[in-house]
Image 1 (cartoon, rainbow, N blue to C red):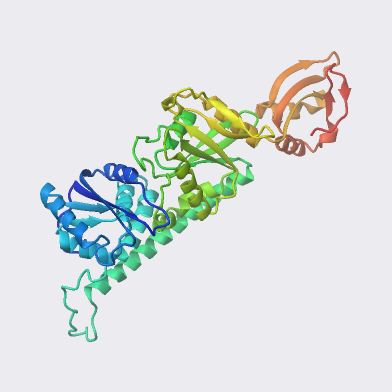
Image 2: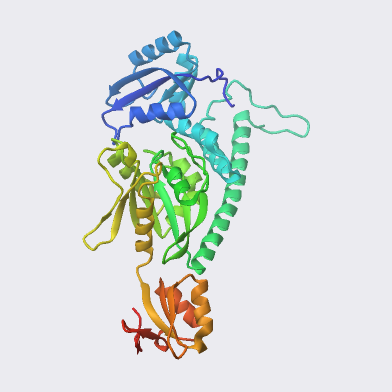
Amino acid sequence: MFFDRPESGELAVLVHLEISQAEQSEDPREFEELVLSAGGDPVDFLTGSRSTPSSKYFVGTGKLEELQAMVKQHNAELVIFNHQLTPSQERNIEHALGCRVLDRTGLILDIFAQRARTHEGKLQVELAQLQHMSTRLIRGWTHLERQKGGIGMRGPGETQLETDRRLLRARIKSIHKRLDRVRKQREQGRRARNRAEIPTLSLVGYTNAGKSTLFNAITDAGVYAEDKLFATLDPTMRRIGLRDVGPAILADTVGFISNLPHRLVEAFRATLEEAASADILLHVVDAADDERARNIEQVKLVLNEIGAGDLPVLMVHNKIDLLSNVDARIDRDDLGKPVAVWLSAQSGAGIEQLMEAITELLSDNIVHQKVLLPASMGSLRARLYRQNAVVGESHQSDGTCVIEIRLPEADLHRMLSAESLTINDLCWAQDDDQASSVVAG
């Protein structure tokens, strides 16, 4: 857009170096999946190792000559690095190769731009792209002379580069304002759910772990799901019903990836805040992935970055249909509390166990007893039925209702308060249905 560059194409040469001084190395297999997800056609793969990247070309002069030969041999129009390049390195390599050069951040941004479907998602991607592009404007217009003054325009003038920077800053500021409005709307929705005491569950996990497939299996929402990295960008929320708990909100979020560009984390902060404000995080893991331990750590890093590192987490090991001798089950800690569920979102095996585990985690204080309600408490009986809290009902000879109830203790207290009653006003039936005045809980 701002550079005199060759037209971009689909044939791509990939570059991956092992940098010995790097804290963490990227996965070349994941890199190739990213390129395929972006619609690229990898025709060659240059690998190597260096202690530190070259300040001018990132690679050494020998590897640069190899790259030139690969580009010429395959008539490639695009070279993609599995690393983050500086603006000067990107320009120097483009000049040497005569084709477009893209780094890892630019590749992920391109995938995000393809996947965004909602207005909010497109705004977030555009913001990240503009912020990335602003660092690539340097010397982009050096072939243009400084604009000259004229009648009514005396003064130093303004270079085209400065004009572009000013326009970028204005657009970035405008998008920030619009995303701030989105953030405020989300905050209002969260406050409303908190007032109604509706719990929120957020699906988080590494990209392509199967979050959207699981979301569809639970909610029948029909969310776009495909075996591609970052198949889903736009957040989706659905109301689900949980036994003993009542309604809850399930949110599907964008997938994470190793070294997720910081600009993307910032741009998608409004979306990721849904995860940060959840009552429980459902951390979906591809159980069939050899890199699952590494992926789990990468997700934890992003969760810490968005302030969700201390939230309760239920691990969800997905894709057990791709494993042998692994059945759907719930793993529990020493206290019997669910800590992990093994399932297959594709086949549906283990979905019931997942709902059971979620219900247990959300319903720490469930009242499941028989209560004796005289005719004078008919309105309370009606409230219990409206709450779907009645398991069974019978009647004594004097007309007293014996109702077996099952509901969260907080909901019971709320209903009693609406009837100007307290827990001490209720009579609880013993096994022989004889009345006894006790306090629940």
